[in-house]
Image (tube, rainbow, N blue to C red; front, side, top):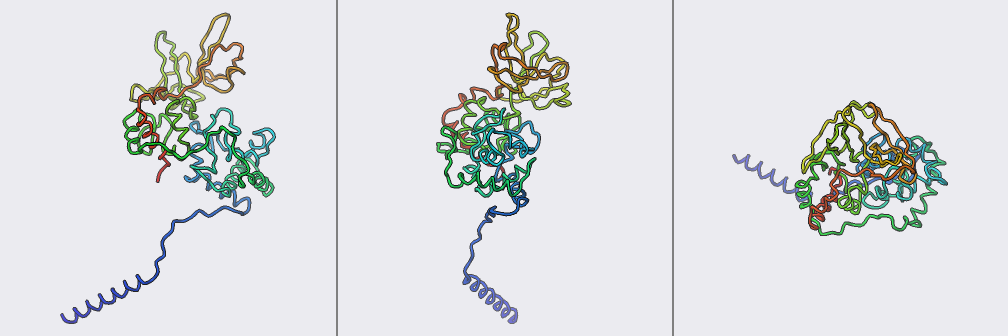
Length: 382
C-alpha cells in the first residue's frame, strides 16, 4: 500500500514537471496555409498551375464557364478558346484579347451573352493576384492554342499596364461595390424558403433547379447584378433558362410557358418536351407531346405577309429586329433554321425569364434587403 502511494506521488511529480516545462517553452501559433504565388516556371508548369486555379472553388470560374458543351452555362464555353482568341476581336492578338477579357470583361462581349455577367477577376469578389491571372491565361490559351515562351512574353507585355494600374475599365461599366445595405441574411433565408424562390432555385441542398443554382451566386456576381435580377428578371437571362412557349394545334387551348428541362429523346430528335411550369407558388414538371404542338420556342416574331400579320414562335439563334433574325422552328419533328429579313418584321417579343416580372413588388423594401443579404452571402460550400 505504501509503495503504491509513493509510486502515485512520483507519477504526479513527473507529470507536473512536464507541464511546467511545456508551458515554459514559447508557443508557436498555427497559421493557415497560404497560396503559393505563381511567378515563373516553364510554359508547361504555368499551364498546369492555371488549370488548377481555373478549376478551383476559390477562382469560381466554373460557376459560370464550362470546359465543354453545357447548355446551362452562364458564360461562354472555354473549350477551343486558344484557337478562337487570335481572331475574336479585330486588331488584337490572343494575348491582348485574353488579358482584356479578364481585366475588363465588358470591353468585348461574345454575341449571345449579356453584359455585366462577369466582374474583373483581379477585383472582389474573386480578386486573383496578377501572377495567378497569368497562369490562368496560359491555361486558357492552351485550349486549342500554343502556349510557349513567345506567347507568355506577349501576355506579360499586355498585362504590365494592368499591374501598374495605368488602365482603368471604361467609365460606366458596372463595378463591384461592397454591399452596404440594412439587410439580415438570416431573415433573407426565411424569405427565400417561404417565397416562390425555393420552388425554382437551389441553394445547397435546398430547393429545385428549374432556375439557376444560387449556391455560389455571391461569389460570382455583384450585389448590383443580384438586385437587378430581383427587380427585372428578364434584363439578363442565364443561358439555358429562357422561358419556352408552347402553342397547341387544338384551337382554343391556352398556350403553356415554362423552362425546358429536357428534350426527349434529345434536342436533335425531339418527340417530348419536359417543361418546368410555375403555377402559383408551386412548380410542376409537365411532359409535352410534340405531335400535339403547333409551334414552340422562346421568341415570338410578328411577320407581315400580303397585308396580313402572322405570329411565328421559334428558338432564337441570332440577329435582331434591325438586321433580321435567325430562328429555329420545329417542323415535323425536326429543327429547321430560317432567316427572317428585317423588312417583314413587325414586332419581336424576345425571350423572357420564367421568374415573375413583378416578384419584387411582392416584398417590402426591408424584405428585399434581407433577401439580397442572404444571396450575397452565398459563396458556395464551406
